[in-house]
Image (tube, one colour):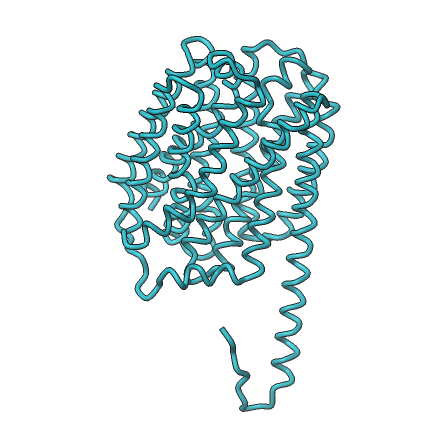
Length: 402
């Protein structure tokens, strides 16, 4: 089982590298193609929207295929997209390559979350999901900084070629280490779709969109923000991304640990603190040391929400979780696309490179409101069930409606 989780983490490492490395290379890519920074930000938005669309579509297409084989096919698509980005002769072609690679993202993490959870006991599911996502977070400590460094000194095309090679390693890892896990008997697409009738599933996805969207509002434009506002040199962006990645690793592990103990309180604390830290980033971005600390905190608090939100979707969609799990990964990236777009708007409007931080703070605060609402609705439903049960005469069954 640890080897199977390692294989999933390897695939996650490659995907995490290609998703986040573009943020450190935006100035170089924009310069080579002769486009503005906000326009280059479309490479982040386009990738995120591709995940949103690809998550349900690729999962549905894979309903007749074993989960292992589908994971392998997704890694193949990921490799092809990154190779296209590496050789793109024009900005539009690179954007297409980003979208092609992104189509594999949501379904890989969605199916991978289900596989990871099935490999362990019920009280360790969030921890197993966090272990898979460790590949994504470690990518921000190792893959993204190295990719940024290579892109700045050798060329961003070399970076995407290396990312494609990482995809090959991930494909081999899945093929060799993940056991065959066919879909459960009797679970069909209509069962998967039924999960979306559950208000708690939809609320969890909305929290995902807004919460992690808050992170991306700030981090998408970290390179111009740190060089123009904080006064860092271009080369310093690499180690700033390392700090962000270290924060993500720590937040992911903490989120996985406490989500198995107290899921909703973990969300309250992480989302509330994230909103505060993002708001403060508008001030700390003007000081090098304060900015560096803030970036690490954003990574930690942002990713502390990932295991609990993913586990909550799996819990609420129990019995047919695969599509819901994949769509929730799409929800993370819908938040990324929304916040990157909003961040570009406020920058283009002349509010400065720190303005996206306010956007992020507002998004995170909205996610916290939804978390409180979700818990309140759950308590009300539980109280109602208790009242109904106590009012039912002994020996009489209460009809259950599905």
